[in-house]
Length: 114
Image (cartoon, rainbow, N blue to C red):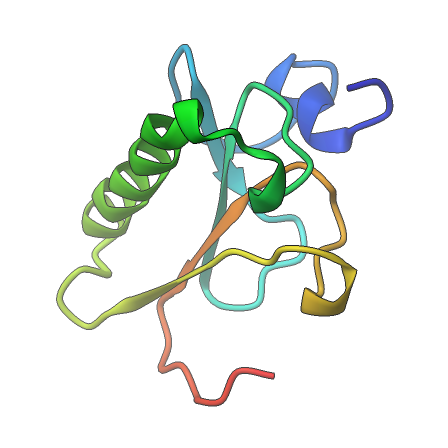
């Protein structure tokens, strides 16, 4: 999608500190981290939010979550815990309208979050 910052990162038009990349997904460090470890995981294919992903793309969601779990393990967060956040829509706080999971950890999380 033209103008989408995450599409530009996925297409290597904008630099990012990559954590992982394959044919379908990319993970990179958030430029405005909310915790010591804050990584964004996105599909390379553009979908504005969770409500835009068709049923036949459900495996893509599984890939994103399983990769988040693997990155959390690799970053040493698996034992103490981490948070995965998916905002959908303006009222949720979604700022970039390209579906993305936040993998957040490295400190104790509070509840409720917002």
